[in-house]
Image (cartoon, rainbow, N blue to C red; front, top):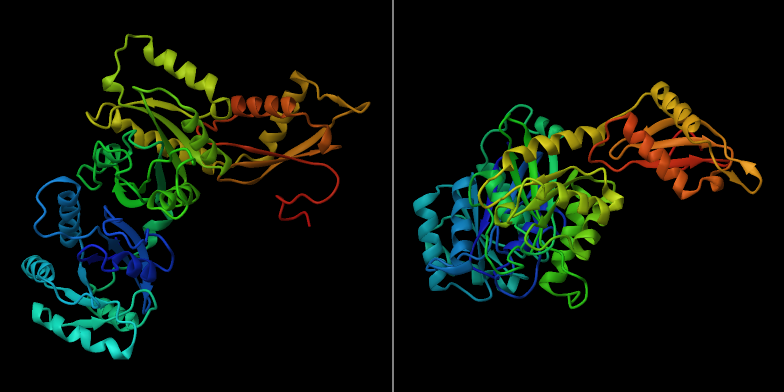
Length: 449
C-alpha cells in the first residue's frame, strides 16, 4: 500500500482545495459553504518521485458530540490514525482561533508526524499572518495558498521527507485492482453496503437522503486477499431541481465521473420501493459507458416474501431493463449483511467477462452457426452477407463483423446476433459492442486505416 497523508482542520479552511491541488484534478467538491466535505476520500499524488495517497476529510469540530458533525469528527480521527503524515490546515485570513488550539492538542496526542499549513496566504504582504500559528506548538509551519499553489512545493518537500521508506514494487498491485462503483438513487443504501463490505464505519450513514455528496474512494481487501477500490457515489436524482453550481450539482458530475473510472458498476435498487425510471436512467449511463454491471436489490430484509418473490422481482427487472438483461441480480441487505459475502465474487466474475477475449476461430464458428439458424435479411433487394468476425478490444468486449453492407444490418438482427453470442460465450455482466464493417475504414480496428 502507498503511504497515506491526511488533511485535517476546521470546516472551510481550504482542505479540499489543497486536496485537488495535490492530486492534480478536481476530485473533491469545493464551495464556499462550510461542511461540504463530509467523508474521507482518497486521491493519489506524486512528488519528488514518491507516490502517496492523500486523504481529504470533513471539517473537524473538536467538541461535536452528535449528528452528522460528530460523524465528521469521527471520520477525521480515523483518518489521523490511518495516515503516516498529517497536514493540519488552518485559515490564515481568519487567524488563530480556539478550535485550532483544540485540533492541535488532539493531533499532538495521536500523531508525531504533523505539519501545519496556514492556508489563504496569497501574497508576501500576508506572510506575517502565519507567525501567530506557532503558538499551537507544532514546529513546522508552512504559509501556503492552495488555490494559487504558493508555498505548496515547500510543504510537499516536507511531506515526502516524513514518509516511510518506499517498499519494493509499491504500486505493482495497482494493475490488479478492480474499481467498483456503487451507484443508484439517494438513500438506497450505498454507504451502508460500503461500510458492510469494509467491515467498519468508513462512510457516514444517515436517514436523510443526500448525506453522501461526493464520490469517495475506499480501498478494500477481499477475503481472498484480492485488492479492490470501492467508489461510494452520491445518489443521482432527476436533473430537474438540481442547480448546476450547487453541491448536489457537483455530486452528479462526480458520480458520472466515477462511472467512467470504474470497471464494474454495482447498481443498487431499493427493494421496498421497486424499480423506478431514475434507476433505469442511472443504469443506462453505466451500460452506455461499457462498464460491467451487477444489479443489487438492497433492503431485502425489509420485504415480505415467499419462495417465489425473488423470482418474480427478477423477472420484472428483466422486463423493465431490456438493455441490461445480461446483468446478474443479487438480493441482499447491507444493513443485516444478508448475502453481502456473495457480492465480491460476483463482481470478480463480471470483471473477468469484461476482460474476456475470444479467439477468431471460435468467433467465426459462432457466426456461421448463427447465420445458419437465422439467415441474414434482405435490404434493398440485396441479401446481407456476414463474412467473418474478430474481437478488436475488451473492457468492454468489442467485436467487428465484416459484412457486404453495414446499412443492411437491422437492429433486430443485431439483437439476435448478440443473444446468440451470449449463448455461445460467457459474457455475464458485461455489455458487448458489435461493430459491422462494410466499405470504408473501421474506426475500431487499429490495423484498418
